[in-house]
Length: 137
Image (cartoon, rainbow, N blue to C red; front, side, top):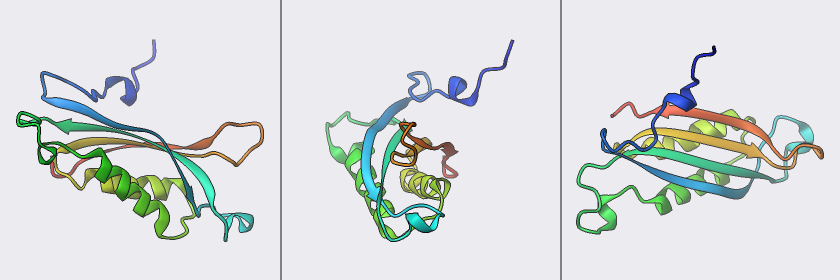
């Protein structure tokens, strides 16, 4: 029998540990990405999915935005990273986005998936998924 993967063992939401799941689904953005000559000088569509394990603390007890990790700030930071400059690799883009997510010390763990949508006519997407832990946690 095979061992469970990290994806199967990592709890994104865990009431005992005081962890809530903040996520962004199917954020589609144009970005300048790719190593091939034909990919330079034009934007390609990427789809980004984020899963964040966030320490709750006393979050949302006062119903104030300052008490929670704001997904709007995460999305805006992701848009900024995607729009900055040409990136050769989806791996590099995913690492930079993970850095945005983990900038808030309440985010204990981030799973980032970046998919290029227009690479092959016979494939819906190609890309990468990474998991990173917060060094501050």
